[in-house]
Image (cartoon, rainbow, N blue to C red; front, side):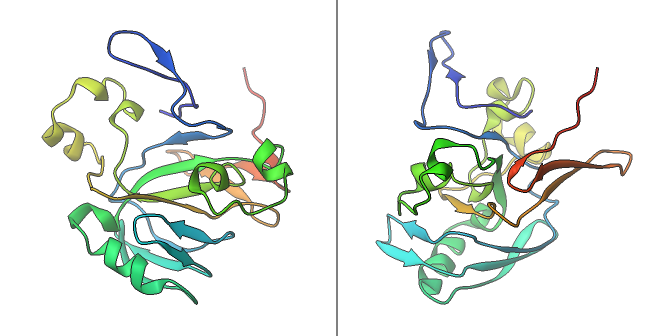
Length: 189
């Protein structure tokens, strides 16, 4: 399921864990990522105290098989080697250019702000609440359904001006989602 910034506790209390939040996000099937991603903003890895620039990450069979950066590469590789799930995706998020963070036109060097400047993904821990009924399922069932588990969860911005985003339906139909840094989702009944 695609969700927004508002979450709810098991006791029914609604809260916003991420402010600001301009994203809609989901947890993808950890076994299905293929291709190369390139960051469009630098990444600050707070635990390592390292700035990462020009990051490129290669995926095969859902796993990160290679990562390079002009700066901070060693910190990225160390995190990717931290546990079995660190090399798979846990989060895919859509953000377009009208977000307040994007409109500021700056790189904040703080993930909670920078992730709201463009589409982003995170390697590492996924969110069980993104699966229907996932909040009550045991870990083995969540894993069987494709959810990723890791002590890491690192968001990297891969969207912004010049980056288009498409969705792919089960029947192979391509659906434009973001064009020219704006929502392009077609209206439907």
